Image (cartoon, rainbow, N blue to C red; front, side, top):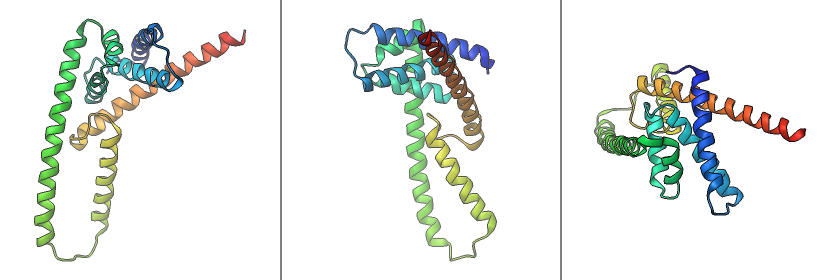
Length: 186
């Protein structure tokens, strides 16, 4: 994992590139369209700063690449390797969906068999704890892009990387907002 300062520098460079592309578009944007473009360019810039080496970054790039209107922004931020990165991201995302679908089918069939076998039992503290961990893990899988079909260890690793990247993104945005506010007050 790169140092936070180099991650911030790379993110800022790519995000400014994405914002310039949005600003140079000939189409007049409403506030909501501008908000979506800023968010899209920030997400793609952060994923690109991680060089699509994580599942969450590949998922963000693949989701951004689905929309034809955002392809121009994605291509400009990713640069020369945009086609290669987008293909790898889309393949990774489609593989995750196939694995996820087969896991759901397997779980449903397992539940049906299990419901027939198990008689009512006394609920133990350990089973309650396991259920809570499982629920929280499922929530985490929905929050982190591209982590729907991961095992718990990989999920924690991806989540930590995603949090570090989001923190870097917030820090850069705060600094940019502060600098803009400071310039406008003079």
